[in-house]
Amino acid sequence: MKGLLNKLYNENHLTREELIYLLDNLGEKDKEKLHELAYNTTIKTYGNKIYIRGLLEFTNYCKNNCKYCGLRRDNKKVERYRLSEEEIFSALEEGDRLGYKTFVLQGGEDPYYTDEILVKIVQDIRDRYKDVAITLSIGERSKESYEKLYMAGADRFLLRHETATAEMYERLHPGMSQQNRIECLYNLKKIGYQVGAGFIVGLPGENKETLADNLLFLKRLEPAMIGIGPFISHPDTPLGQCKNGSVETTLIMISLTRLLLPKALIPATTALNTLSSEGLEKGILAGANVVMLNLSPPEARKKYEIYKNKEITDIHQLKKIEERAKKVNFYVDMGRGDYIDFNGGIKYV
Ligand code: 5AD
Ligand code: SF4
Image (tube, rainbow, N blue to C red; front, side, top):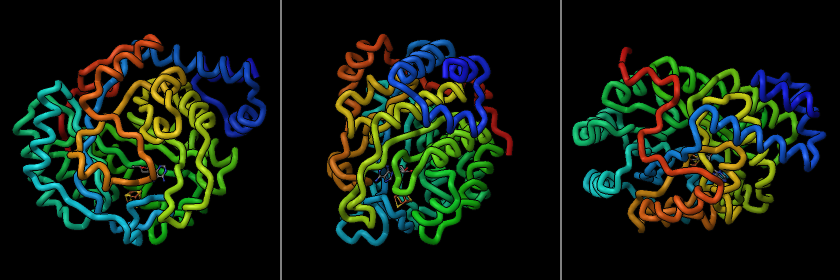
């Protein structure tokens, strides 16, 4: 085991067999060592800084029906909303005033947002805030659509691969295809976005092979950002009776990801913070270096219920984040926090 951990730390690679062996045989002491190596690797690559993002959930309409998600189209209990452009800008204005340099616009896959509407929103944000990073998290679209949004001023795109196992992907995403999702991710990369992928830990049917395949998928794709969070069951979904994912496994996945991809920006996710009161601290100690704080208007926040009891940290709670990070020797960085290999924003399509 010691040999494997050292190999991972020095070479940033393990084979599928080695990963599965590691997952099967990781003792308590090995886990500590794994987290320590991951934490040191973050510091070596980015320093002991935690990057802050402002998250705006601008629509909770969704045409998809992902079996785990509270916003799925068949959940009729959700009160749906779309923020007006004024509401979007008043939220961003507050973020800007507080010094935020990354805005993440997240939404369900909402057909209301044509390219024309979205391009205008992105352009307006770009016109108003010249030096912020604009991140979109709006699901699968055509390559042309991604290109238009990139040229309008978007810099980054979050699209988790959710699970690398084809059978599991198709089972949990009715009407969607894993092939298309992967194509979207590669299109986004090709266009020049800093791309975020990632997966859910503890989905029903998951095993060690699934976890290893998720890690190897990420290693191949080499995204700039990687979001990993535990599954949290939502009662108004088909998976309402399934048990939640494990915090411990999530932390192990964060550490392995950090060691396989030392340059990745890895958030301590909201889901991790929801299942663990010390999610941020534990996440950092396992290799995370990003946190997303919520910018959405309070009425919208309650309605953006991907899972129950979502632990929302508000953009005004930066002081608290600072104190918590300090406990694990990390410091808040309000900069854009770009990927280390970022090309400086030169756009070519
Ligand atoms: N538990 C954990 N994560 C979830 N997501 C959606 N529903 C759940 C859930 N019940 C994640 C998906 C999606 C991201 C925005 O939230 O991975 O990509
Ligand atoms: Fe829609 Fe995203 Fe929820 Fe799937 S996970 S139902 S795409 S909001």
